[in-house]
Length: 455
Ligand code: S3P
Image 1 (cartoon, rainbow, N blue to C red):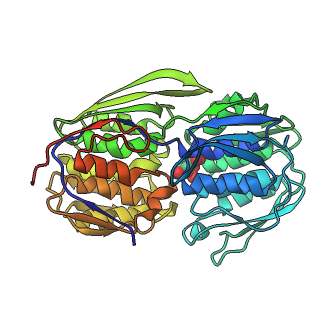
Image 2 (cartoon, protein in one colour):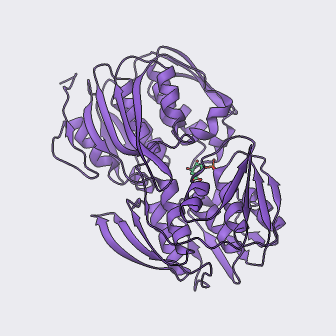
Image 3 (cartoon, rainbow, N blue to C red):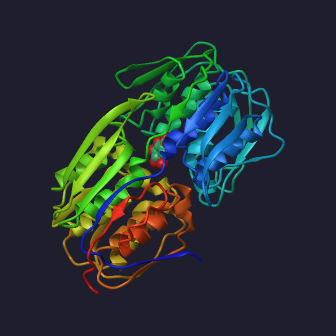
């Protein structure tokens, strides 16, 4: 079984870029695949989740060529030949692996096709709620059977139909649900509107715009008119701010550190992590260098100093939902109390991330109280190395690798192959940071040096 063995470091000096954004890579594979021509996708994330989506599009008749690869992982530059809105019936059920985004967005696309299809996933994905997309897609006229052991869970059997437009008020703030409905709306006759209870990441809207598909936003309502075919274009995927977040926390909480992350996506629906760390006392500057294909992209620079606790605001939660495990680690390292509430959605991620974070923090000696919708952490107690489980959840594995960089003694994290779900090369970056390796690693890890404290 794969493991991370982590020991404390005293400061982190590094300059590198992280792999491509996961949310955007899924969307690029799908939107290019239904476009009207050839699209060059650069810096595609060769992670298991996104490769499953790419393969899924392949099994739906989309042809693609791999132009560049990250050795040992998969394609980073791909030319995708769009099918002009019409996918082909797959010959077998489609494997979405561990990916909620893959399954939910594909369900939106497949609901509108003239064939039946089936989506399945691993054990974690098979226990995640799919009613949140089944309900609106059935309102549009699709028929979707959740055939899993738990009601409303995958495998999903999708009977594609011609769809009716709807106006749908989402009960949860979910970009996945919004995107599934918008993608289905693209194929319906008339105007489909999704109303979100709070802002969620807007990559689908931005990417559709890059492919010349018009959506309209009024307040919290986003509308799309059916019948538009995405116009083939090229798309450069920025680095994933959710992957950068692990290093931002490590550097911010370690006095004397300096970290520069380049070419990272700085879309405002994703950068709440920076605001929270700044509120905790971190010295961070983020500079948008350009808007590439409709997405802001730039540099984040962190100078380390001690952190203090904070309270996450309800409106921030959807925009840092994936970063909460590592924010909880920052909270344990910070002086004082951090309150994370209104985050019940964490219970239906790749694992129940409230339970898995609380368990691991306690094993490292942190003081933490669990709530149904979050947790309260009293930070500042020194963390101790421990043997921890990832529970097969990539973000738990990586968040606690970061905790290990601050703990006295060795921290072992078991079952870490799951990091390939979102961050191929994380282990190399971690090792380089621990070993103060100056060799370039995957994703242009440029310079790293530090002194080790317990040596
Ligand atoms: C994602 C949206 C978020 C996030 C997930 C990726 C997306 O989920 O947790 O990792 O790409 O749309 P929800 O929209 O369900 O909150």
